[in-house]
Amino acid sequence: MNPQYILVVAIIVIMGWFAVGVIYNLRRGDTLLKWMQGGLPGIGQKTTFRWLGTSVAELVIAHAKKPFRRLETLLVFRPRDVFWMTILAYFQGRSDIVIFRAQLTTAPITDLDLLDPKSWSGRNASSQLEERKWESKTYRGLQLMAPKGLLDLATTTLDRLAAPMGKLSPRYARFSLRRDTPNLEVHMPFPQYRVTEANQYFEALRELAQAVSERE
Image (cartoon, one colour):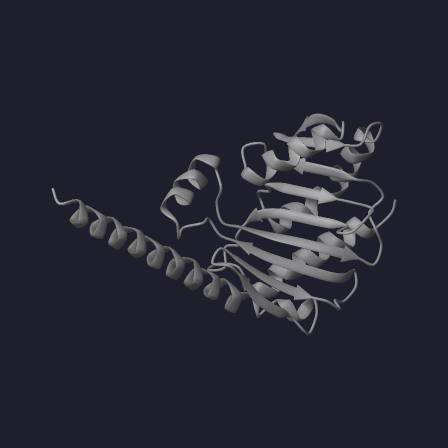
């Protein structure tokens, strides 16, 4: 077979894959962003938006309402535009996730991370925290990690947050609290925007942030 023919076919396949992957992510992102417009005003009135490449969309509310000071939202898509990256992401267990990073008016009382070790972001965070010598235990099928001596406090904190966490999402790849910023960071699947109202979703996020800020 003519090598030039093979090269032309390969280029067509690669470019076609790239175009389909980009269009899919952009359309999916546009749908989710339009849905979010119904709930974001409950967090803050002014939102800035930009695409970071073809796989990440960023929304920032720099002056948010209490209990937030600032909220960053990242829509992270599986990299579908490059064939080998798509295959690699599949084997890594990477899927489309939403990430919220919040600075709160009142910081949480302890540092902790609740991780799904089967998820890509959970595995990465677990490796980093192990290097910092954080303690670890199993918590409701996930991996709970906290600084030395704070694992019991982390457990009681999560027990207290169980209801608002469940209201926001049934699954988490990562749930992180820090006394330094960002005070709250969550990684979880995209919301079920076809059956969920955006204002209810962001109200659940606000309630979770309020519960994180409370001190008992």
